[in-house]
Image 1: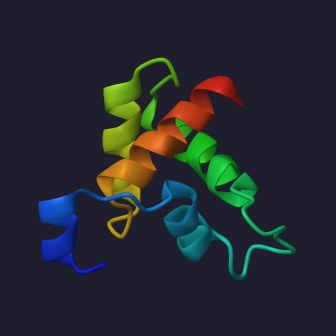
Image 2: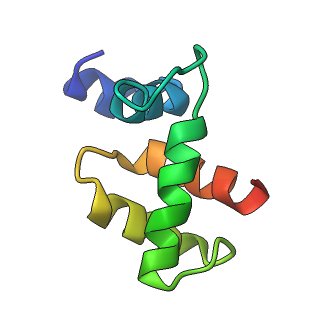
Amino acid sequence: MSQLGKLIFGDRSDPSVQLLEIFGEGHGEVVPNSVGPAITWGHGVIEAAGVTPDQQLLTIKALRDAEPRLDLRPATHLAKLLLIA
């Protein structure tokens, strides 16, 4: 869906898809729909930033600062996964 379409109709895409696109290739064997590499990367990022997973806004900011290709919705999804993983 185009950016304009997302603005008008809302972004209904699965945030795991973008996480898989960014972190899925070149990170070993990845099972389809697996966000394991993204979670591993995310834990490293927030640890380096001195942020705990329960600090969701700071976690999202640290993730997006570390990976500029990461949109808000997938970053929020990853932050929630870091909280429970």
